[in-house]
Image 1: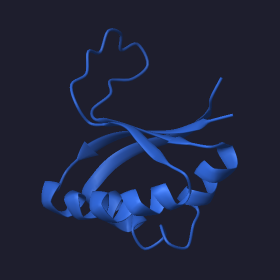
Image 2 (image 1 turned 60 degrees about the horizontal axis):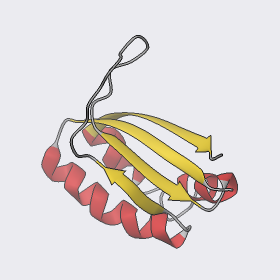
Image 3 (image 1 turned 180 degrees about the vertical axis):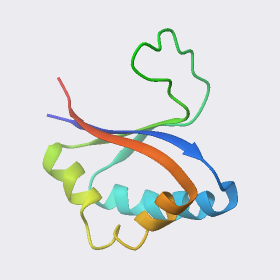
Image 4 (image 1 turned 135 degrees about the vertical axis):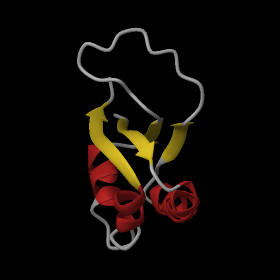
Length: 96
């Protein structure tokens, strides 16, 4: 069953964040990740719990693959680029 890594991102340094995007994508793909949403227009209809900023959704084959990507040795040196240049909320959801 597919799993989805969902990230809400508030980019603070666009130039450096571009570097992160270029490095992270091939690593996610190595773990079976396919980008389904990467920014783009949003129509936010309700905000009782949170107001999303910029959404990214990556589909993985399963929860194990999504976790393996996030915790991988390849991603470890790339993760600080995201953390230093954006505020993010990440969640991994089991697909139905």
